[in-house]
Amino acid sequence: LQRFRPALFISCLMVLTLAVIIPLFYSVDASAGLILLPYLAWISFATVLNKTICKLNPTDENGYNNGMLQSQIQDLQEKAAKYAGL
Image 1 (cartoon, rainbow, N blue to C red):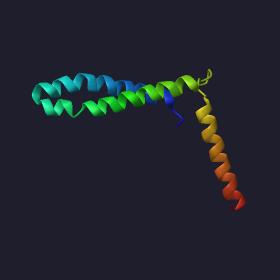
Image 2: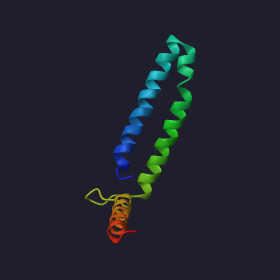
Image 3: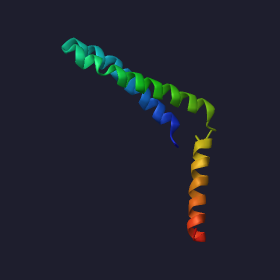
């Protein structure tokens, strides 16, 4: 949960790749192309969700966002609990 923007970039690449591959697969075998449509729908949904997360967690000039902060706080809490013997 720390690298929202690289994940968004990869998701966009996956959607574009599928948009190119599906017609190619369909031209060879219709069922091969059709079976990829649910995957395209799922990746598209994940991409929109990731884009929304990026909008809700803006980064500062150093690329630091709230997701990174929350992750570091959780790590510190776990270390403190371990140190305290909990």
